[in-house]
Length: 184
Image (cartoon, rainbow, N blue to C red; front, side, top):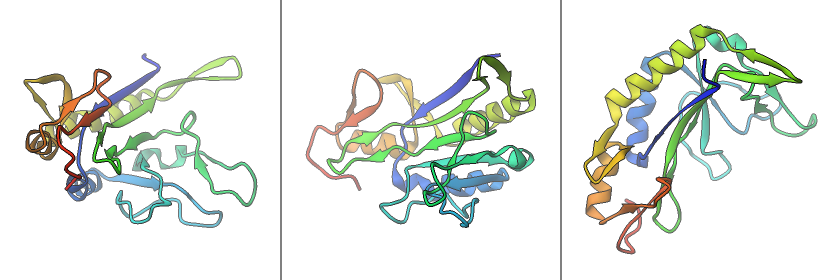
């Protein structure tokens, strides 16, 4: 069993409402940061409404809800997700920087971890669920472009790339427009 799995992609903010609806239709629960002490753990959607919200959302299957582990530095600090022990997929939306550069998004899940020298594996059912989420997400939202055949893009991201003459960097983490046009 591999230790982790990651799916990288480029999406634009206009994709988020449809992605949100898709994930909800799959019965996925959302955990958005920060989680304030005594606050609600599960969010209603993946949308970012304030600058304080983290660009990451954690996705949990309903059958893995009890496998969510939270931690905090002290009793006054916000809670965070223990991504090592939790049965979650980290969803980083990517999106546009203030300079109009499109940042890569990703899904990331950890299957095995080191617990003080002891290697622990998450249940195989979790791996099956993660792969099903990745597969259905790719089928529904992602495409490959001839000029970027190793990368995945939403149709809206490809449209933005073409309209702005954008090119990805060698690492595949950013897409730079050839013009100074801001993100739409």
